[in-house]
Length: 516
Image (cartoon, rainbow, N blue to C red):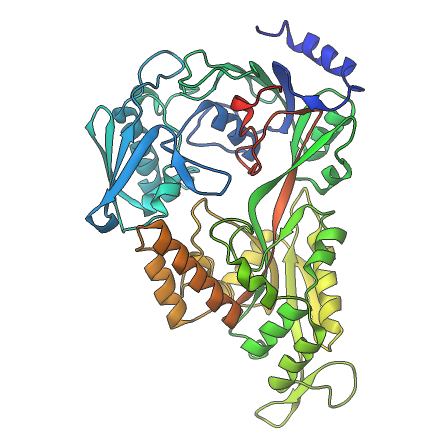
């Protein structure tokens, strides 16, 4: 039953502010940051929190489970042939869009082709959120009403992760607020103010207990938190470090979710000072737990490799080989020829011209508008390096200036983050000449491994290549993976039993959550 009105709902929420944290009822009010979304365009989201709403409305061929493995959704099954060059997806025959029309292979093909056409359009600069599909799919066609054939540009298990794009009716791919096939339907939208979601009565699964979701929009991250503090909303999505003050208790539940943002310390492999031994020494000196506790208020998860820990793709057997070890760092630095010969507290060595040079590094970082924590991170790292005689000059800069420095190679150390793709493929960071390889890392063996990964159609073979890539990453230490950024869902009502709540899918599990 639809709630009586927007104002009445807020009044009810205020009266609940002192209640004990409990399971969600048949409705929930969620505060998010949104000021740029002017239309409901599932293929072209412009704000991260809006994507979580879209995921409750639009479904895809494949979904990703708690173990981060592809699972059936609109496609009830699939198989690969021709050595992974052809993938055939079999569409469920009991699915209807929220307007009652059947979902068929033509809708899947039209949705994918809309994404591909935009990705290939050289006349525009914004190619859409799902543009990466173009790197993997050569063509997509409907064999019949419920069979989709995908020709891959290369045999690749990771293609399954790209089949997570939304599917809408064939005739409405370019329209505003097209029907979806998911558990909810958007019944009302007011840009900059609010958005209503109601249960989709045509959903092909059992109806959700939570019948209505109201999103209340805010201009800033701080106003989202303030709205929760004053009980104007029952839940909020936030990546702000300020949100870490809320702990699970009698009035609030805090669910940490993982973002796709990997924080790294880049080390220029072309810098004369940064040999493999020095890079490994720097890795030995960084206290990640201290950075997470002091700078990020716990909103991060340590990682030694560019994959999320605890998932099937992460080689956690190697973690024991990477830990803070000051004495090992001193040994590695001495092996590289660095010592404090003049006893001034800074390591030095004699260069080719017979002159004494100090181990002095240019250390750059940039800040994000809502989380100015990298300055503290840079200082913690610099202090740790100074402990063994590595001197750093820290410089703050804008993101655009940082990008110029990275592209030009005009840095020694750089504190940056990467928005990692849904598919577990680190090749863009590690292969020579690729877009994210700012550190100028060169390894014939890594080239072979990454190339082989991108031609591996089976899960078992794909995982084996990932394990080998991580072992070589450990040995070569091209840069330091620090941690994955986390966010918080702060709520007065629990609404999911999923153990892996992820950015862009923060409502994941609400459709199947029942009060027990």
